Image (cartoon, rainbow, N blue to C red; front, side, top):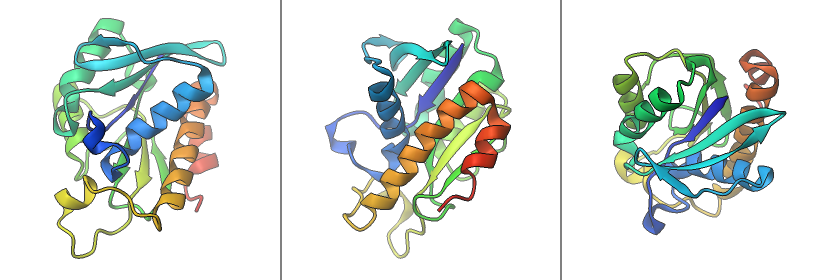
Length: 187
């Protein structure tokens, strides 16, 4: 079993914001796989289905970004998800706009949602799929990430979401190394 967690902020106010690219990715996966989000469990919306015969649980934490770990840790504990089967998808200001980067493990970096997850799990050895937001320029970081994407950014961000969804499927079916080879560095 795999758990694919897309990070974001709940509610209509945050739809189509830069910080919700993780939610956008799991929503796209759900649509492609015919999975409905229905269950609210451990402060997260869940959808269950399969990829390549492997059970998957799609997760959208409802805790707001900075507390994502409060939803993910109890789910990991309850479902007994091995760390290499926990995939976290999120936005990253340190990557160029729309760029996708997959890593087997690593630090949380500057991302508060990931910091919360690493803190709650007390480990960082799980795969992650990041989607680049590009530089925020003169806009303060907190305002930039919760800001709505512009029409200029939209095509590149959507390409990033499409690649992230494909990368998640590849991780489940063929492993992290294969996903890294296929999707890291694609512009």
